[in-house]
Image (tube, rainbow, N blue to C red):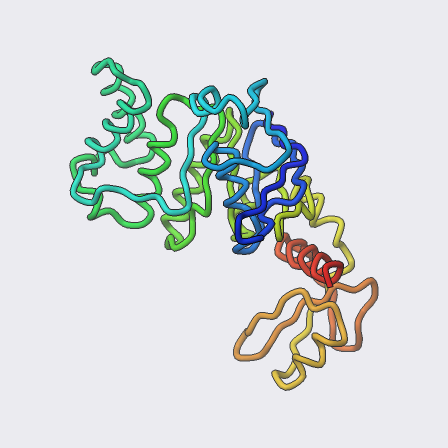
Length: 293
């Protein structure tokens, strides 16, 4: 269990990145969903001991994360949003180097670990290739391999599927799902489908504040009978946005299709639809924006 209480962080430029964040994160996949600039990366860096908090506490399996950084680092695997590699080094050589840095000093044990991880992330056949020749998805899978050195109990991945093609995205998410069976895996993303497909628990965060926590399917069910859809003219779009709580707009065949949150049918031409997590996401962001205004 990862327990975060009253965590706050304000940067020197005055940006309040974390604003009294409270989260209880159990074993398994946990989705942290929010737009760019919501505070997700700030939270990930703080949990990963890469930056200090101004106030609050983080505890993981009895470890005070903010005070005993070395202890938590021994149980931590981290794949940051921008994971750099040495392009002229092979996957096997660089992973071996990371294993040495993680304390695997016995060559036999280290070789066994490196081989096992490369096979786990399906990179064994490419182990001799230079990392500069890897696709985006292959680099992300290599990033997960380095994060798993030492059998961590807490794995953090920050925007891991951004820029991946559908095949690589699915392969990467399947890998995360397998890892998340026995440890805490925090998936920080702005891609709603990643959370819907993988995470039994989640939180929505925006402007450093937690807007919602719980199970994705419960959050979706709470919007039953409240989401309406209609095709509208482009010239009418602004009028509808001013008149109703428009959650999202998508062009389908060149025509705007809008989703509206309402207790009742907004007007003739709207039909009730089954909500999804994207509707939950935008409904919470809109409500937060209205409160802030």
